[in-house]
Every structure is written in structure tokens, then in C-alpha cells.
Length: 411
Image (cartoon, rainbow, N blue to C red; front, side, top):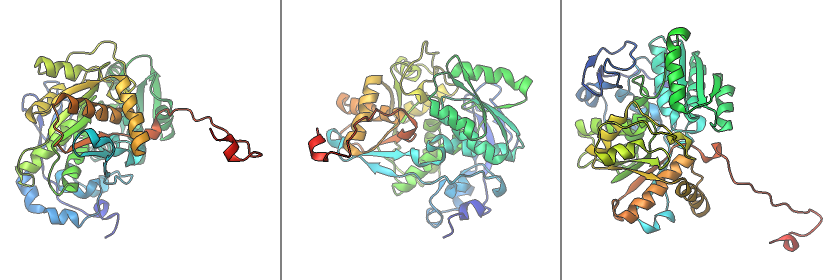
């Protein structure tokens, strides 16, 4: 089986139209769209029955295990427009030591993807569709990893890219964005300030605004997390999914995937409970969930060590809340101290280096096992959204004198 066969094979696609996530308004496919007329995200719709007739589970298993295995459920029409850096199937790793106080605990390690984070899924798909639709200049705000993924894929596609990030974005992320060919600036504000500047620049700079959910296709890339997870578990799903939630594209995308698979009979029975995990220093979705609101309010003075989930306002807030409620899940917040403790515990006990956002899901799982909202009988999946190597690590300053024995210096 040739490792590139998914990227070389022409396969049918089944997109029928796009639909406003808020009011259901219909929009034509194969045209450039931003937000709907209601100012809300557009969702890609498929003829799922036709897709199911075209491909079977056994067909998929004959293909290489990568993101493009699921081509019939994705929007790119023409094979030559696929922009790929080798999007592998990410592993599910069982945390035997960490799960001692609860049920089966699995981590899906998205840090194995190109550019070291799950942002590769969404930006890979969105850039491929940008190429297909003839877009030549893109701008986006980022807390780090999304900008790195956009820079890599857009450079590969020959698309000019502008990235704006908060001034306290991790240095490695800013340098990574620049190194991979994008023009990058630090902004003395938060990601919503960066997003406002990108939006304001659309007219004068003639760029396409690639902010989270302001184009329809990043969701489709993130949707592959749900397709892949079900595939890895033998077309079953876990009881609970803990997902680090900022803009929430992945949570929305996975819930979309599970419902599409259920519609064609590939998933039967109950779907996973979706848990949106935020930090107490920036928890607009948690507040809206607890208040029974459909939309979240702007979170003032947002601050957390987990920069990827420091999103004070999300244009897809109602889609996140819909997924959480429809799945009988919930939204929960953990403190920075719990995040750091969780990161250290996973590293020291399991040898698994999580990113802060991934560690937030572990902290949330511990919290909710204790609260009783998650049963010790539940099989739970945590999403580690990026490699921990992208983030500051504790100092390690021990030294040895080569003129002395190790034993006499051991302490």
C-alpha cells in the first residue's frame, strides 16, 4: 500500500451546499464564503447517503491511516488542490497510572501532527480549499499554534500570509510562524484585538480573513478528529470527550462528525458526552453553560497559562454550547495551578509531556471524577492538542565534574 495513495487518488466528493449554523440559511458550494448573512459560521453539508454508498468501512481500512483516508466526507473536490505535510493518524495512548482514580483514560496525542499541533488538521483543510477557490492572500489572528500551521500550509500552497498574535504569545510560536514564511506581528492586546485588526484590514489589504470559524472549512479539517477516533475504536465512541475549548472548532467539528456517521449507520447507540474545558481565568463558555444561555459574553481581562484557550469571545459560541447540551455533556473550568500540576503529574508519572491546554483536560477529568459528573466506569478521551516541546520547560541545571566519580557527586 503506497504511503501517498490518499494524496494521489481521485475520489468522489459529496458536498451539496453550505448552511448557516444559526438560522439554517442555504449558501451555494464551490464559491468563496465568509460568515453567513446573520454574521455566524457556515457549515458544510453533504449527501451522506451517497457518500455511504460510495465507500465502506472496509474500503477505508485498505487505505493508509492518515487524515485523507476520509476523502468522501471532506470538501476538497480536486486532488491537485490537496496541500499536505503528512497528516498522520494520531495515537490513542492509555494512561494506566493516571487513571487509578477513575475509569479507562486515553489521550489522543495531536502533537504528532505537522507543525506539532491539532491546528494542522483545520488549516490543512482550509488552505486546500483556499487554493481550490483561488484565494491568494490570507490573514489571521492566533495565540500561536494556528498561526504556525497556517504559515506552513499557506507557504506550501504559494499563498501570501499575514499573522497577528498577542504580544505574550510564546516566543517559539512567533519564530516558528516567521520561519515558515508568514509575515508576523505581535500586538499589544489579546486575540480578539488581533482579530479586530485582521477584520479591519480586509478592505485595505485585500486579504481573506482566516479567523476561527470565519471561513467554513477549518471545521471540516478538525472533524477528522471525530472520524479518526471512531475509526480507531472500531466504529465505536468513548463515553466522554474532554476538549480544550477556546474557539471550539474541534469540539464543533467532532460533534458534526459523530452525527454524520450516525446518519449513515456507522455509529449506533449513544454518542459521547462532549465536555468543553476552559481555564478559570477565561471561561466564557462555562459561564454561558451554567447560566443556560445560548451565547457567551465577552470575558474581561482574560488570563491563563494555557494561551491556546485564552479566547475571550468565540463567534461559534452557540455551536459549542449546542454540542455540549445535545450530547448531555457540560462545560468546566480549571485553575492555572491545576493545569500546571496536571502537566507535571502526567510527565512525572507517565512520561507523557502534555501542552498546557492538554493538561487542562486532565485536570478537568480529575475534577469531574471527584465531582461525580464523570463515572469511574466511563471510558474517557482527553485531547492533547500540541506537543509539550513547544512550551517553556522547567530548568535542569545539575552538573558533574568529569574528574570525580559519579557516586561521590550523587545527591
